[in-house]
Image (tube, rainbow, N blue to C red; front, side, top):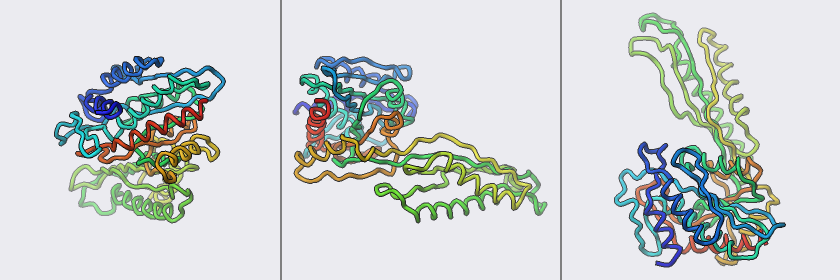
Length: 376
């Protein structure tokens, strides 16, 4: 097995299931130790940042001579669970593909970035190259949040699998909940305030709001924001009027939309409906939110990726956006212009997962060329 495929296989063989997703999951300690050792033997400055007990980030630096910009390469070490998979941590090579949990999401891109930063340590660059192999991307993104708080860079590439497409924007999300409170009463008494029926009116208004959002796409790569009702619960028993109903909502946001805007949309709806029946009290609460991401139009890294990508692949690199959130937003929010570019494959979070090895080799070479040009 050639060196890059061998490294991907070594990483896939390490169980790094996120324990916040799967209680009892192995976590990132073992894979972090392996990555740190591999990089240290290739001359990089390496240390571990313990973000949570037993769950470190790996930080490696190829230090330049000075006077040049710093580029960060980022990838996550944790995976989702393996229930239903046969031999999930036994890497299998077939038809130019390497199979196993995490091969695609994202140990293939992680290994490609490791090869590129190792090559950077052998070259006379002016700028630094920082490699961050982070924990917890699959749950709360704590690893990259910690990196964003501790380290500075002039630009970043996240090696998530993108099918060799350049991702320069993605959506964010806002979690909200609305609680309606009526009055508990015997089911035989007509006219009692019904919290669930009131929430039905809220749901109808939310459906109308979502249609309005979808009808006005305003971002060239991401389209429009959207929302959906995620979870609902309420009532006490079949023979009683419900005293309470709780609705949890996810609002997907595009650049320019904020958590405050998303909350205001919901508050406008519930205030109008509560006015129609003042016996029902309605409360809106904010939950977790993560921002959307968009690389600056004049950022140099996208241009370099397009240039060297076309040289390597023989065709123009497609520039696109993603409908979901990634760690790129955490780096961008810290003032680090960030894009995503990674290998091809399939099976993220699925029972069969694989990475295309040739695409991983192309990523390693592209990262190496971009580093040489940007940090020269």
